[in-house]
Amino acid sequence: MSLVMTLATRNLLHDRLRLVATLIGIVFSVVLVMIQMGLFLGFGHMVSTMIDHANADLWVLPKGAKCFEDPSQLDVKLREKVAAADGVASVVPLVIGFSDWRLDSGEVTPVFIVGSDVKAGGLQPWNVVEGDVRSLSQWGAVAVDRTYFDRLGIKKLGDAAEIHGHKVKVVAVTDGIRSFTTTPYVFVDQKDSRFYTGMFPSKASDLLVRLKPDADRTKAVQAIRDRVGNDVEVLTTAEFRKRSRSFWLFGTGAGAALFAGAILGVIVGTVIVAQTLYSSTKDHLSEFATLRAMGSSNNYIYGVIIYQALFNAVVGFIMAGAIGYVVVRMTERSALPIVITPWLMAALFVLTVVMCVASGFVAIIRVVRIDPASVFMR
Amino acid sequence: MNDIIIDAREIRKTLGKGAGEVQALRGVDLALRKGELTLLMGPSGSGKTTLLLILGCMLTPSAGRVTVCGTATSDADKEALARIRRDHIGFVFQSYHLFPTMTARQNVQLALDIRGHHGRDAARKSRDALALVGLDQKAKSLPDSLSGGEQQRVAIARAFVANPSVILADEPTSALDGDSGRAIMRILVDAAHKRDRAVLVVTHDPRIVSFADRIVRIEDGVLADEQADESERRRLPKAASWP
Ligand SMILES: Nc1ncnc2c1ncn2[C@@H]1O[C@H](COP(=O)(O)OP(=O)(O)OP(=O)(O)O)[C@@H](O)[C@H]1O
Ligand SMILES: [Mg+2]
Image (cartoon, rainbow over all chains, first blue to last red; front, side, top):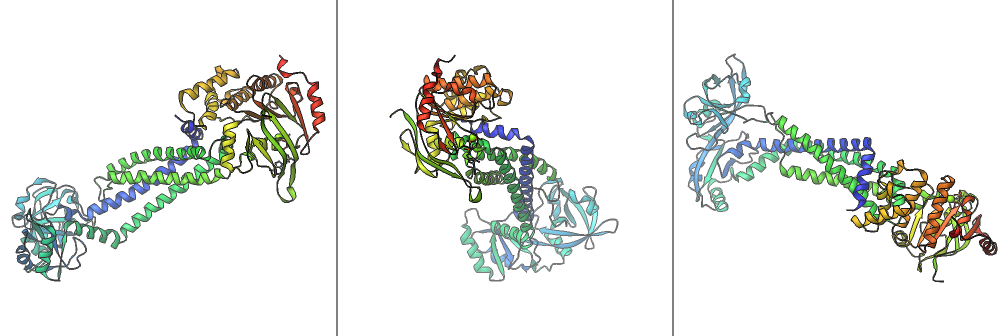
């Protein structure tokens, strides 16, 4: 084994205070980037949660609908036209929209109604922890999430309230179906949802399309488009998810803000590592000059510096990872969970290494300029 | 003539710029032969270090040429000069320049490491080199825990370990007490006589004059004339016969 690593590590461990400062810099920067990107992913997941849980291959949407919550409507008669297209197995209309929920105390709070045909499937509550989804087909039955119990003035399954002047009863309770818009989702059967949202029977928000198992997706999309005309759009689930995410993340500037935070983290981290590596290199300049006098190649010296940079990167990343794990755990049950995927971790590791090695080059530029003779003339 | 390891001809060196410009060397000819320990003596500021650095391919002369083991150095770039140092030259500095975070053995082994020579064999060779300078018991010590003389012996072991043909030492004894200084000089004399190296020692330490095979005097960037040099050499007893 070469002594490059020994020399690099010993030098780093020798300047304890500086090592601590460097690692704190790296950890802060990586954790900042991790949280920003984790929020970005968490937000992305959250805004598409309804789309992800809908039982649909294709979505027929009013033209220009930007996201699941979009208030625009389409003609429910399209349902028959779509159902008649080649490859289509079933079509379920969705009726969604804002409404008002009256607590026992008389207080009123806004809710978001998600109405789907309970018998036909489509979009049903998931993660049901109490009650039975099938009971939703009864008049006035609703499913709510237990994280919103307080807000909705509900204490348990079977409690009653009023939506838009109609008596309702909680027949199912879910866990973890949260909305990033803080407005609670309330799942109901499609027939009820028209009373709550005031949508006419001739209208629907979207149509959820299931294809036959052997259907050709591209051909089916085309077949539906040919039938429904220009007032509506036909998107695959993946396309709709992407459109929703880009609307909420970039249309609203939230994503840009998160990215700006992440970039700031990278800049701060790079500056800190560059600064400490540079000053460390400066302090050890006479050692590098000695190596050079002994006849070492520049590459050998760069090896020492780059190894120091990598050491910083790996140790800093491991510490940041541990903190990230705690943060993920802590936000798991919050309104906006931070989502950290293996891909994000891999990307963060690469970023940390790049950040540290780039900083190493700043130090290398300094070392290239040393004239070994100058060290020995004194 | 094959005995000549480093041959320097007509060396001139201007240091500094503008008003601070100094003619540190003004036409120096010097050849270092194997098996010979040469002392380079002269007053402070006379150009001794400058000459040593030029002979050691650490500084390029403003004029003149240096040949190391038959290789002309005038066209070499920095990386090529480093290679010449790596292949042929060992340095010993007045202030040792050991690596404070590395043990004595690792300090010596660095000289092998930069030559791409790693592993057990390199460690063994480094311990052997330490044994040669009488420090086998201190292989695991850090420089800070060694005396000045011991540190300088580690530095000499480092200069030797890769078998260079020439050893250049700048004031290796001036920071040491008499006994340590003599111990260092005996090692350097052995390197010249028993191992057939060319050794150049820059000094203004009169205590070590007796170890020289040859003394070269420098003043104001020029060598005192060769005649005086030769006569001085004849007056000196052979260093190897010293206890
Ligand atoms: N970087 C420099 N710029 C300008 N002048 C320099 C520089 N380095 C050395 N000098 C001058 O060059 C001359 C020769 O210096 P050198 O270090 O070779 O002398 P020396 O004989 O080794 O002296 P000492 O015995 O004090 O070590 C001196 O006058 C010194 O002041
Ligand atoms: Mg000097």
